[in-house]
Image (cartoon, one colour):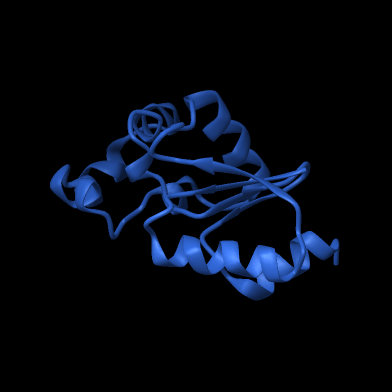
Length: 119
């Protein structure tokens, strides 16, 4: 079963959820603000995603900007970044689609279609 991690007020998350529903794809919904990912979960997802860890940060978010993370991230270790991401779901880029052997960060329809169809 897929886990769809989103922020319900986010327009991109709404678009991704509509796509999942339109394509009859079963998933478990997880609100990232209510149920923030742990550092361990984030580490597992990062390893499954084949994306750089920086891609897991919501760089357009107010919290990211107010914390001036653009300047701070380059000096941080992987563990420090994971710990920071686990402190607040609003720091994490969304939506996330977590499958058994993949994790997708952000919504790109072609990428999601390929992942859920096993292509």
